[in-house]
Length: 152
Image (cartoon, rainbow, N blue to C red; front, side, top):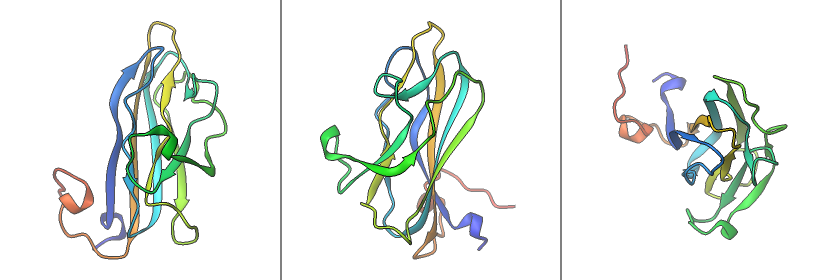
């Protein structure tokens, strides 16, 4: 199996548009059993900024011992944030990497709740996580977090 195939994908933020409001609560990636995590945020049409806490803070990752729905249960991961808010620029990708083999992390990681600015046109956004370097190989599409996996 190729290293690129030995990975799991987690949909954190389904593709959606927000305008002056929060995006849907991000799902968490269960990072147990993996050595590396890559968190991607991607914009489509973007007429405003995307950030955390009313668009004033850069997007960041947070962790928790359980996949809790209570915001107070989550803790920010030091240095796991973008340099600034996501600007109003169409079709851009942003990424935060976490080396899970050389750090102690809680089992669930997600982006902190994100909010779009309010210009009237909104921002299209989605977020995914790619987990790699598994402790055990993954043989099926479902084990890789996919509905279908075609290998040519």
